[in-house]
Image (cartoon, rainbow, N blue to C red; front, side):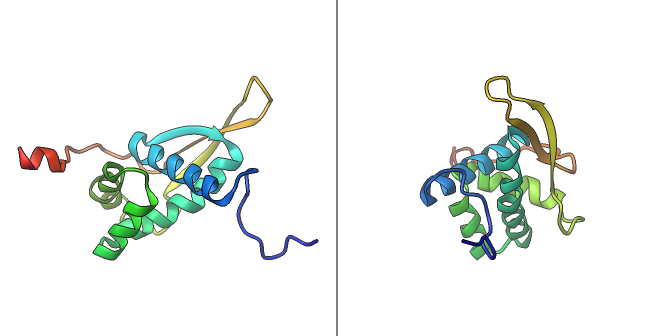
Length: 133
């Protein structure tokens, strides 16, 4: 059998588990700004998060709803729209960087750090609860 035309890695998981994995990794990246995971997961996360950042930079309601659906928490989606995306407008693509780190002790897997290329300055963002109070 050939692999022509098949895009993406399976990670020995079902489709819904793969989607949940990418959603969780993307949410962690947006909230923390930098995460460490295995190299194949980091490379696959680049494909996932770049599309979300592009949608966040457009900023209309339809794209906002798509990003909220693609991230695990609304807090992460609001941070991506209100804090991160405005700081990345000068860049067309290549918003995140993958750097190899040490090999994992248990099984020797190549680990990698994924982070935003530009330094993200954290600004105070009012949440819905703070606005209501």
